[in-house]
Image (cartoon, rainbow, N blue to C red; front, side):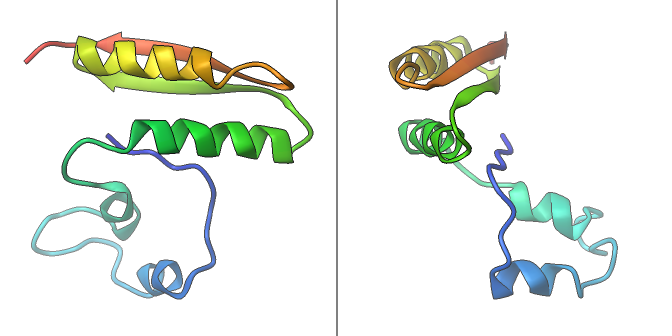
Length: 99
């Protein structure tokens, strides 16, 4: 799963832009490598951060897109509902699969 909330100007992000377009070992671009993570993401923290970004932008709606096992989809849908209201609404678009 790749999640990207906001662009950062952190030095480690800037370093990625100075690397070759493709990594010879993995065949992946640096931008793709930057969003790959092992393990399950911290979904409560991600959705809380999304809510805060919506509020910081003056409120409104944001779409949360999730693709994964049904249990993860249900968790994201519940978190989106939990973090909606008070000026920020997180709409959920889901696709699920079972392994």
